[in-house]
Amino acid sequence: MVYEIDSFLAFTIGIIVYFAGMHVNRSIGFLREYNIPEAVTGGILASLFALAIFLATGAELEYDLAVRDILLVYFFTAIGINAKISDLILGGKPLVILLLLTLGYIVFQDIIGISVAMLIDQPKAIGILTGSASLIGGHGTSIAWAPEIAANHGVPNALEIGVASATLGLVIASLLGGPIAKYLLSRHKLSGSFEDAAIVGIAHKNEDTEQINHVSLMAVFLSLHLAIILGFILNNIITQTGLKLPLFVSCLLVAIVLSNSLPILTPKLNWPARTKALALVSDFSLSLFIAMSLMGMQLWAIADLAGPLLILLVLQSLAAVFFIIFVLFRLMGNDYLAAVLSAGFALGATPTAIANMTAVTKSHGPAPTAFIILPLVGAFFVDITKHL
Image (cartoon, rainbow, N blue to C red; front, top):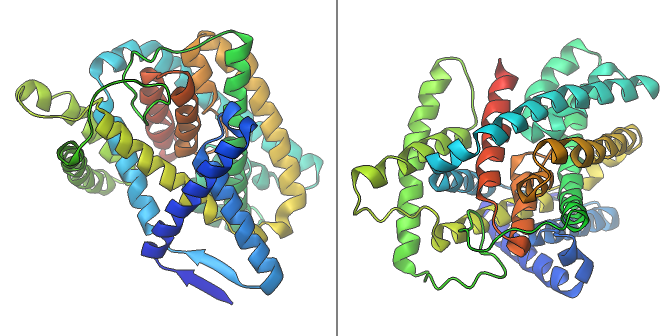
């Protein structure tokens, strides 16, 4: 029996799941120490609870996650509003390096996937599905490529494999990012500065006196909605050219343009870039997106694929850890920015990467450049590359 949970109730449960994760993180020290996001803790516990219900009764919980998708658009639009041209110029060299590393690692990830698939006597196409398609592309790319692979490469259950790999990749990325950053920060004695304004979330050690009230929050939502409306129009125009980009990418680009033009054209405008109110909305949107994504995992659907899939993902995880620590961190500068970026690289889609980086920066200090260049690479340049 399938119990369908509507979007309003799913949204409510998502909030409860986040609070549950926050309570567990407060009670278990190593979760805080290793920067595991509260939403990740709560979401994994909720998915395990759903699995227990399925094993005990055969009942399946299926959530309507429409609100989750709206939260994703809010989040990336907020990232765009916070993007300053000066940061983009400052981040020019790191952005190019990160883009080259990401594109190179996409090839490396697929080589690993294909090689391991052949070693365990699986079709080569499964190596692609359990490589960049799911681990960097996420659920969207996996679902998009599954029909092609199923029809032409002898993998009839390509959709199930792709979704399962993306799901497990989300979990692995959520659990690995924080410990990797913790290791690098400790090993190289690195830390950030709380003098910089946070782009996502309110830092745990922030003593800023800026106030948040209903007016500041309404200004934030008005700005977000303006950018989203224009982003929706831009997305439709782009789609007509034959290039399909996620809505949140169009909204991100529009928000960057608005944030670097409107305050100059209208100096008296109360534009909310780099305010605590916008950081709060960003944190809220991202946290609930991650909580709802993880709580919606149907772990019982992955069970039949567990053997070969786990072998592939374990090896991909080991390769990612090695690459991040010995290649990415060093080429990105061996500094605090590099450590924060290391928390969000290679495994899991862009929102998971941002969640990991947010958990790190809340405890160790903001890293504004990281929150500009990683979404541009992961959600824009890579997405365009996939459609070329």
